[in-house]
Length: 96
Image (cartoon, rainbow, N blue to C red; front, side, top):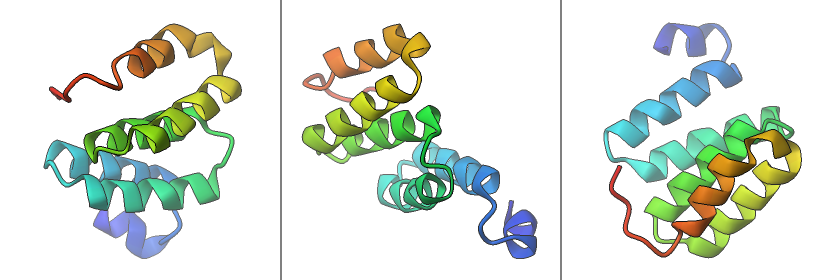
């Protein structure tokens, strides 16, 4: 990933993968920073908004998470079951 970002620092796919790694390492602040950059590069990508919602939930920001989930739902209604399930669990502790 580092090599991909050196070649193209704005590479949204590499940044998305880096965000996934940050989340796996329980570093949600860094993940959110990467996802914000990806969102800026690909604002109509529902999966980015969904991932941001999950990160914001982990950070204890349910209002921001809900906004991201609603945006993801607007952008990709076919994934509504997954997104609605995440929205329903906003008040539950994160067990990822």
